[in-house]
Length: 237
Ligand SMILES: C[S@@+](CC[C@H](N)C(=O)[O-])C[C@H]1O[C@@H](n2cnc3c(N)ncnc32)[C@H](O)[C@@H]1O
Image 1 (cartoon, rainbow, N blue to C red):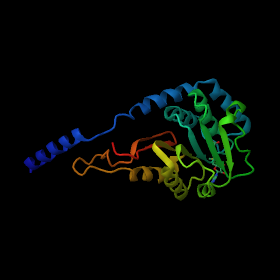
Image 2: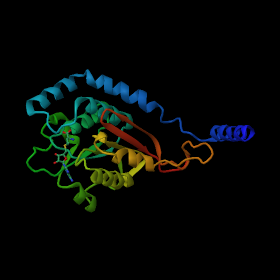
Image 3: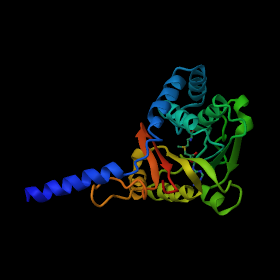
Image 4: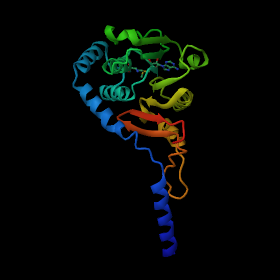
């Protein structure tokens, strides 16, 4: 029995050495946390806090999560971003500010909101509006129509936080994300949709029990505060 288990261990160790675990995405943690920390002490954060307090903060993304979202957007440097649940534009403003700070002059944020009474995007500062594309209606209808870009770099879920709806949006927009595209979700604590979605992207190596990087369809994923993110992997290494 002891001999058998030593053989298994040697094989597992050898398999691990040859496993093509990607190191390319290890910088995401350092980079996102640095950008988020800068953002939290910035004049922009002070201005957005003032706007939030003047409006009343109910229903908006919290400031810690906004800073993480800003950091993720700067790290990803997207050209096409879609967000569901735009509401008064707290999350939108931080994505748009990341565009400007990264010099992404052609980037666009498509922000979907179905509540016609909510002053969609009211908190977005005027200077950030040229890259803001507010879309009024249900996410369900936009995915059926042709108003959304066919390929997107980053998707943020912040609409209805029911288990079924979150999983539906994750699946729907994952399909539209390019290789290395970023799926971001707010309020991942409210049900098991996000961890279950991430779990489905794993493939395991039978010998080691660790992820098989060739067949796993994400490069990296994580959770910070109430924000979860997954980086899509479409192609084999
Ligand atoms: C939590 S709030 C979004 C907060 C916003 N991201 C912010 O930081 O200011 C959720 C919003 O999603 C909208 N919503 C819910 N279900 C939706 C759907 N199926 N399609 C479009 N919008 C939806 C609601 O009307 C609500 O305004």
